[in-house]
Picture 1: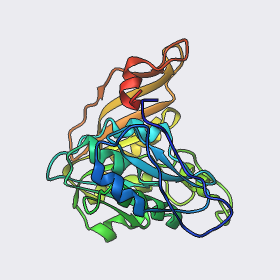
Picture 2 (picture 1 turned 90 degrees about the horizontal axis):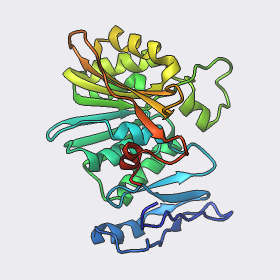
Picture 3 (picture 1 turned 90 degrees about the vertical axis):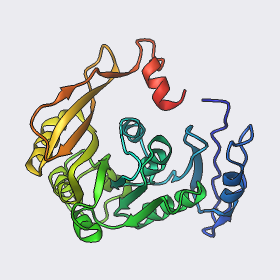
Picture 4 (picture 1 turned 135 degrees about the vertical axis):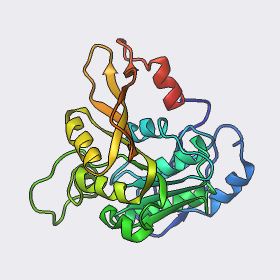
Length: 281
């Protein structure tokens, strides 16, 4: 942890919104942002987490889905340039477009999230960080993205998608299950939508579980997105990869670059220099 405090407010039993008033250990670099965040409401069980990236903060709910380190990893590999538009599929709490607002120069960043509660938290986080109108959150189904936004309208699509298959009754499944398992969308359906909303030559960035790498690559190529680079992520150098980060390009020729693996911890359990840089440690 840096010299900033990771601080949060958990509201009691009342379901009424409560005004957040919190301060880090040292003055935030963006003083206008500090005054702006006082207008944002937190609800029961919600907390405010510091992202350790240019004073960015995010609203999360301890009783539901919270973002994982996979999303942070992906945000550090995404490239989006001035005049480009980025669309994040399954945006959850909005962590990827919020981080990418600082890590890229993209003109516009849109998070598409199916679940209303998560979309609402993400929207408030965007306001909290004074990122409107550059960053916006849209509630909707990834499968409907071509209708919602139009074909060939984005330069970059990103996703930290559900990575486990799902079988059984969809009724009553939890928020977290919907985020982690293919309850409402499969990787093939996601890539079908990505292939439609991407411009020719547009780029797709995805983080996924290593055990399903074949499913990911097949889905990408099946919908016109050629895998162009692959980074394996290992918990330790002595352990096999458990996560992959893949970049694809719409309409590109075959040929993939296998990059140097990213190792998160050394053998003593301490972040490697590469991981420290990514996580801001």
